[in-house]
Length: 330
Image (cartoon, rainbow, N blue to C red; front, side, top):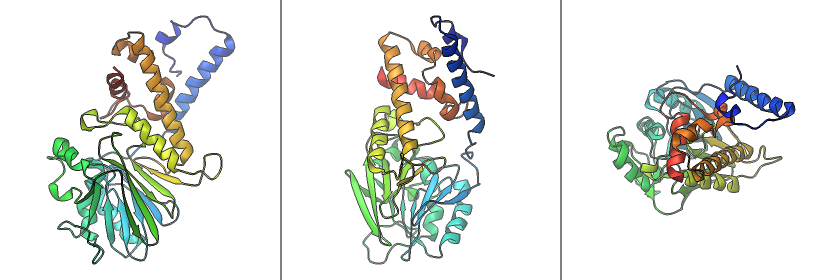
């Protein structure tokens, strides 16, 4: 079935058969993309998938978030911990990758899907002796931006127990670690998904972990009430593009572990950034024409992207995304 809305066709001026054929082909391509789009794991699923990335890095996919694990002779660095339902399988996967304990756990954002499994990781973790890192009762430093504490107090204090909160926080733009011959940069993005987001760059392995700033399976779920914004999200994507270095034609080179979905490269981020910029500009134009939100929704400003990133149900639908864009621009 072709998903070209009659409401749009009825407002178009007469067009050539060639232009109409191109429009119909685009709709069929969207249907193909929707049919081939992989079904993400449910947020409460206990399923996981373990994939090598490059260098010392592995990715463990869960329904809560993707997890990065850096291996090395001095121990492990884990980025995010996924949903609690998958914790037992995540722990077994980490143990299968290395007999050594995690030395640091980094949370890319103060969101439940990224830190609900902190307890399970902490129980098998062990801080580096004498490194001065403050740790919790589980024996493991949990690193995050200080703004995340405000986010947790504001929105998730009943969902995330205090002992799972980051206990080794930093202020400002950047914090760095060095372990197993690998420099690790943690870079704060002040207003992307929330005010607490950080990017984690493993410089020797050349792998960048983005958290939900880049979600290859959905439109970005930014929280204005927690300091997030569409423009901050676009700024963060531009920073990712600035950090990554492709090997050839925007492929290869620096690899990216997104918040959800497959391992990506710079070209994927460029397409995602361009998609958000185009939708933003379309909604802005409709606003300048005095359109209400219902009229913006009827105009389908995200039409050709809905097959890849949209949703008609769940906690972040296409309509919710467009409403958040509309409200910010208004």
